[in-house]
Image (cartoon, rainbow, N blue to C red; front, side, top):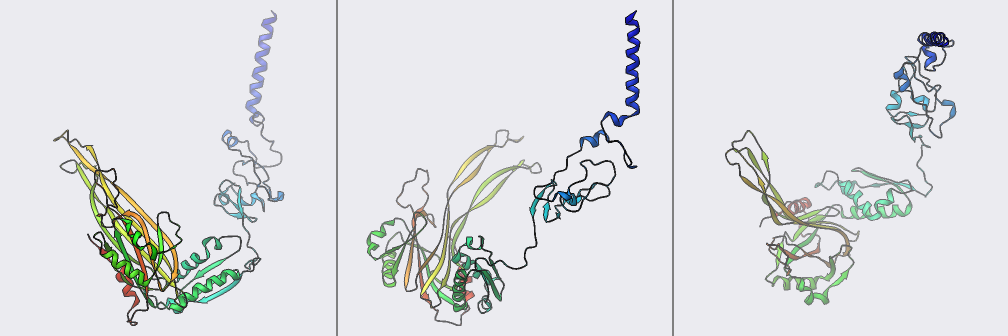
Length: 449
C-alpha cells in the first residue's frame, strides 16, 4: 500500500520539473536575466559554443577593455576607445578591423585579435646619437658618360657596400644610402663618410674613361710549371682554399708566359685584350651545350604512346673582371669572379615503356653528372705589377686535360690547372674610342670547341 502511494507522488514531481524547464529555458542554461535591456534574448547553443573570453594584450591601458565577453545576437558589441576594444566595430558585432591588422592606440592588431607590434610616428628627425651627418655627393659627371648600363649609380652603391661592409648599414646606428643618376645621399658617421668619399672620388676621377686590360685564361694539364717560376712569384693572401695568387713584375710575367706557351699542354681561352670603364664589369666566356635524353612522357595522342624529352646541359667557364683604379691610377682594386662547369658523364637509366605493339619495350634516359667550381674574391695590387691566379686543378674548359690524376670512372673527365693573368695596360692609345665597344665585345665573346 505504501509503495502504491509513493510512485504517483514521484511521477507528479518529475512532471512538474519538466514543465518548469520548458517554460523558462533561460534558467536551464544559466543565461543572464534580461533586466531592463529590451534587446536581450536567450543565447542559442551555437552562440554559447562560440563564446571566447576577451584578452587584453599586455601593456595596453585597462580603460579600453572590452565591456563583455559575450556576443549576443545582433546587439551592439562592446567596442571601446583604445586598447583591444578599439579594433572591434559596433553595430552588428563585426571584427573586420582586427582581422585586417589595423592599428589602434599605437598597437598593430593582427588576425588573432592580439597586438603584434607597437608603431609610433617617431620624433620626425633622424637620430644622431652616434654622430651621424648628412652628405650629398654629385655623381653626375660619372653617370652621364656611362652608356653600358641603365643604372650606373648602382655600381657606385655596390662598391660602397664592398668598401664599408654590408653590416655597417644595418646596425645600431641609423644609416641612409640612396642614389639616383645625379646625387648620392648618405647619412652615417664621419668615419664611414670618409670611406664613401674615397669611393666616389675614384669613380669621378676616371669619369668613365676606359682602361686597357689584358685578361688571359690559360689551362695546363699539370701544375709543375711552378717549379721553374717559383723564384719570380711573390705570393699574396687568398681566402679560397686551393687557390693561389701571386704578383709579378711585368718583365717576369712576359718571360713566364713565353715559357708556358712552349709547352705542348698550353691552351689559352678567351680574348686577352679588353677595354673596361672604371667600376664596370667585363667578362670572358667559353661554353657549349651537351644534349641528353632527360625523360619519357606518356602521350596518348601520339602513335607510340610516349614522347622523349631532350634537354641540354651547359658546360664551360666565365671569368668576370670588375676593376676600379685609385684616384692617381697607381693601384688597381678589382673583383674577380670565376665559374666553371663540366659534364663528367651521362649516367644511363633504363625505363620500362610498354605499349600494345611492344609490351616489353624499354627506353633509356640520362642523368648528367656535373661538377662545378666557383671563385669570387677581391684583390688590390699596384698598377705596374701583374696579378697571377692559379685556381688549382679544376674542370678543364675544353674537356681535354687530365691533370695527371686517374679518376675511378669509365671515362676520365678533363682536368687542368687553370691560370688567370690580369695586367693593366693603362690608357688606350685611341682615346676617342667608345669604351662601351670594348666592354660589349668582351661580354659577347663565346668560344666553341
